[in-house]
Image (tube, rainbow, N blue to C red):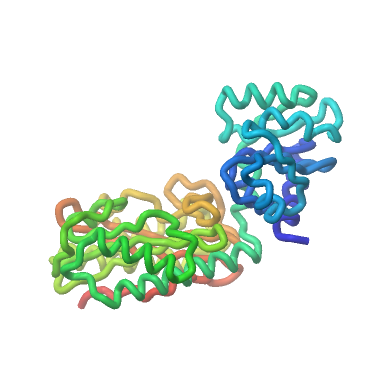
Length: 359
């Protein structure tokens, strides 16, 4: 049985518990997760009587090569018109779920027309509930993606940073990722030096990286469809005392939270561990974002590891631990590891060295 067929079985078990006979999947990431299809136009219907993937002629060959556990139907460019014919083995009146978060009102109306023989039920997070826990194939892909990221940063860092242009460093990062085997970056790399480091999502600029400051580098790769995410803050020369203290505090908060990332802790409680550490150091107001997030086929997935996070950390999750401190007009620091939650200590798969706090 393929990984995709195993996921479909898990989905059918969930649908049965929800008293649904099938689920119309329209989110392309969820379709890839369930079937293996990679393309820009498809819908999938997963049910006990029949599971089908409907795409158009542009993907006829690749869809048949990629898809597992589903019948591939090649329809028109507008796939909703082909939906009714693909459901002839499902009994009239069956309850079919649709992904409410992925359907506009107009598309929902068209789906309801195509599936008029059935009772349509809006659902939220059905497939995402499965994706939150990674299977063995996903874990292997995440490890490979993270290893490519480590190796790419090592290549870039060997040349040093002082005097180089942020944009040039960002471009070298992408090149090193691709040369290392990545399908591409999981997001546009962040390279932010000096005062620009106080912007958590800074866009690399055209200024040269100065000495005696901190440099934030946030990057990730895609391999086998799976993302990685890692941030390292480089200590350049002798930064001002405020940045030295921020680095020490962020480093300590990241280490403490990493140690507590075990099954059974609530996401909000894990966030609070790092946040409390930073607040006790007098810089709580400078840590505005959440501690981390899930990573998988998307760079940001559940669970959200933040103060309002309601999910419980479980073995099989892939999450980031990334506290940050941002001092406007001075600079910033963020240290981020991607980890796999296990029954014991977390498996840290971001292995590029983290600099020790300055003396």
